[in-house]
Length: 221
Image 1 (tube, rainbow, N blue to C red):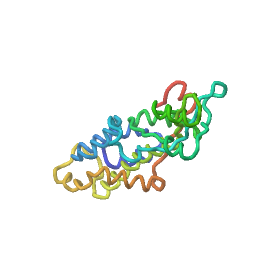
Image 2: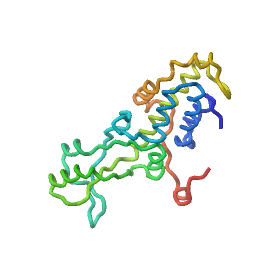
Image 3: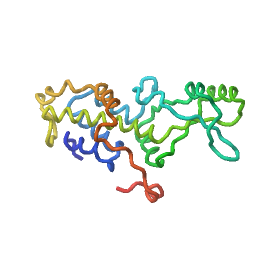
Image 4: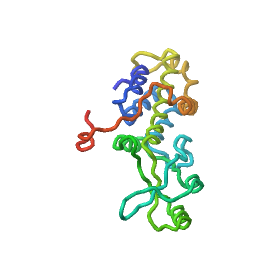
């Protein structure tokens, strides 16, 4: 698989190319350029953050809705007020990108993914609303997709800067002189913070939905 800057940038703009498949190529490119900080960030994004407190802000305190499990109707909106939603209705997503991307692929637009409330938080909310039902946070598909778009956008911005610095064309390796030219671009935080601000403006696609047959028999390709 090509590790050229040009090809990687093209892949970030191709909705058929999953981020799960793009990131390993980005890690290879970062390694070739001796961009150790970028490679380390990409690996954490790929594998997930073992310490969620060290996850970037685009993975932290993501807004959701508290839902309750009804024996008759399944999961329904919980009778909570705005204060309770603000205090408990958010979630960190430290998981690796593959599991996050699978949520988007398998969810239809308008749907979401549930995660049970923390045991202590659930007990507090149950007591406050006088309800014994299981409680969960429902995060919309868009929340997951926006997180993934932010990561994809950061890679896009990084490759754009590399291309602007002249790092185009096919390379099996980069000379010390070439690496020196772009060593100042080994700044993942700069790129993901820029991506957070510009995610809606960049030519980076959303995660597509899997079709019925793909969900039944696996992704084609």
